Length: 149
Image 1: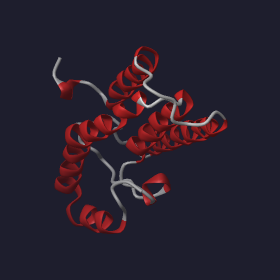
Image 2: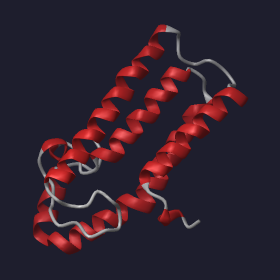
Image 3: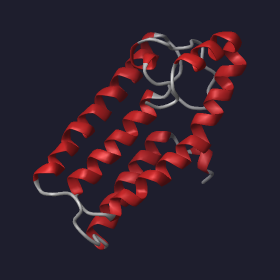
Image 4: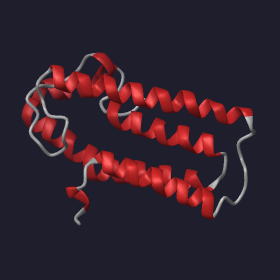
């Protein structure tokens, strides 16, 4: 299966599974104190909320949420006022939340790989498509809003 045929949510699910496998098979060491790991619940919830808000914005605007499909609207309000990629930010928060909940070192190895893959496979291509479709409006938005936070 080609990497670009998979959706970002599939990368998220694979990353979550890989984190669990690494945690249970190769925990290495506990790096998060017991009560601090509950912070993971907050980050996990924040990631889910950001994703739901962004997904809702896509649907309300009648534009595609799927990568590599041509967008019909440049979203700049709601979560898109703070980051150009709220769904990917939400995914990373979910992964960090899970890593905190698991408390061990090895799940953290997955997060940078997920970030690099989503940037190279999805974000760069999506931003090129937005630039081609919306031109000056995209360039103006890009100068005002960060790619991440």
